[in-house]
Amino acid sequence: MHRLVVVSGSSHCDFADVVAESLGLSLHPVLRAKFPNGEIRFELLESVRGADVYIVQTSCEPVNDMLMELLVMVQACRYASANTITAVMPLFPYSRQDKMDSWKQPITAKLVANMLSVAGVNRVLTMQLHNAQLQGFFDIPCDNLQSDIAIESWIKRFIPDYAELVIVGADKGAVKTATHISHKLGTHVALFHKQRRVASEVHDMILVGSVRGKVVVVVDDLADTSNTLCLAAERLNEAGAARIYAVVTHGVFSGQAQQKLSESLFELVVCTNTVPQPAEVAKNPRFHIIDVSNIFAKCIWNMHDSTSVENAFLSESSLLNWRLSHKKDADSVSKSFTEDEGDRLSQNEGCTNQKSTQTIKKDVKGQEN
Image (cartoon, rainbow, N blue to C red; front, side):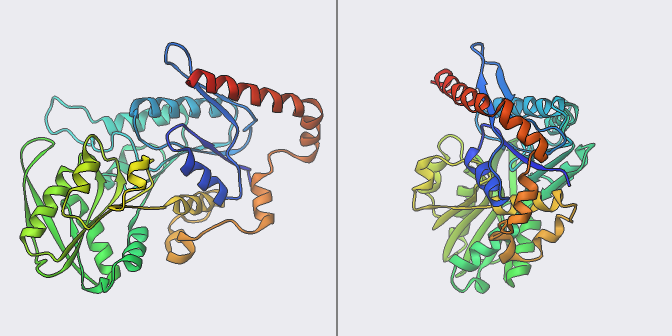
């Protein structure tokens, strides 16, 4: 088995660190910075030759910088003779630009998929693509993880008498998720039909199904401006819902979204940690964040161990609480060199690398400031 290496980009270092820790590893030492003209600077500080490298980089502001940094990191690992390179992208960038609403528009999600392949990515691991058909945009394997199991676990834990609630899909794209969760929990399901007058702007939402006197959970893949969610809460309140919750996989929360949701009719707004959240969201009692790092860690281990990723979802408790606990397994994964190579490195380069790494980190900190 090739050694396993986890590399983190700048987008979500805390998430990457927890993923690596669950695998019994530390993040691979790298240099991340920018040149004075704004170009991305990246350097591997230790060898990845012959390793299976997993680069963790999600989509968050500034989106284009994060995407470009990922491409640079991939090419660096490719030139450094990594055995395989997997792009771990909890939120896939440009995933909503997956079709042409008119002949004037590009299909940018396909462009991003092509860029990843050209850079040298062998496989993509992501969660809750905006459209499942996006997997067909890739000429390389793409594993699209579902957040359903984490959402189901949260509902069971935090909503009393959950068997009586109604799961509502925020739009037709969320119906499959709502139906799957409803089936697992043995609850009812409803959905919203959006009416638009112009693209990217919802004029009205029509509720299909009964929610009167019921506790309602609205599910969606992503909340950006949150206008759709807030309008959905108003329509559910008008339809007689007793209590209303919102659960989304990717909490982007652009602009005034946090304030809108805090002042909305939702009892609680729940999202996963696929994108980093500012302190005001993490500390806001109206928001709750579900940790899905273990889902990614377990799936990475299964991929590295040539085991079906689908098998990782067979047990809810083992998946959500998974850790690589066996020391012999962790040692076999994290071992970077043979004994002879390790001795040679420690004799010739060990002290020098430690000092240079510390110096580089100081230089990078100074550049960032």
